[in-house]
Length: 194
Image (tube, rainbow, N blue to C red; front, side, top):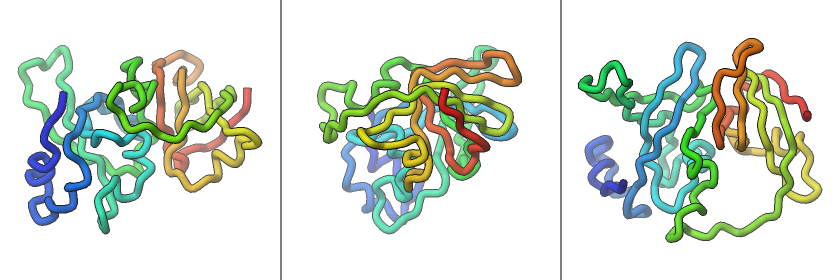
């Protein structure tokens, strides 16, 4: 589903709508946002040609001269509240523990679409990694370029760490699984190569 980005942005930020001329439209993407106190399921607008991970790792998400500290989420309705009105939630990026994609196609990234921008291909090798974030342990694949170590990926300038084929445990119980997770590096307690 696509929406006119300019219209969506004018509604949210009327004083700076001119900054969005970089993107023609957005795709609505459903994700689960984990914080210390709750899990929020909702949709975000991801500009065409931008990967989901880029939305979290880019300080200004493509908007010139504007630091984006909050992600706008349109909360999804639950089975119990189909008729309930969907709330708009502004979630501070720094306080997100991790983001989980449930849709298999989202795990393949923006390259899964035939009209997507082609990113430079860099051959990477999967490394099995377990990451402790607060009360969760996320186990999955971390991809490393040739001659890159896990410590290089953990210490690079990105804010969020991408992992694929993730299992999330809470205590010792399997809690959730998903094709893709973006983990806030500021929230990582430890990481262990498996």
